[in-house]
Image 1: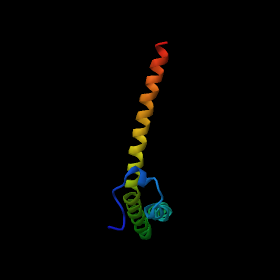
Image 2: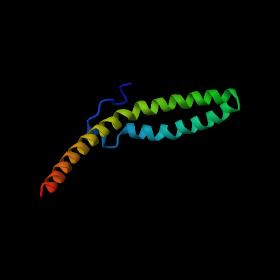
Image 3: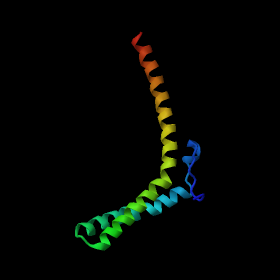
Image 4: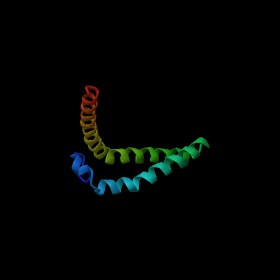
Length: 98
């Protein structure tokens, strides 16, 4: 599926793209089919198991589409957080020395 971009740089991943819109469309469908499918499956209806399977499939597609963007943004955030904590430690250490 060349239609979906899988490799993201943090600055690219922070912008809205077609992958975000795909996730926006699939997300409510996935969760609704999971909810309805589970309810109908608990009633042991055949359509419930089919709906539940469809919900699981849609959830897999949702994560496949949006996860690379989330990982790229998360890595950049973790890097900034690490730098901030190191800087904060230096400031606190400097104040303790006073």
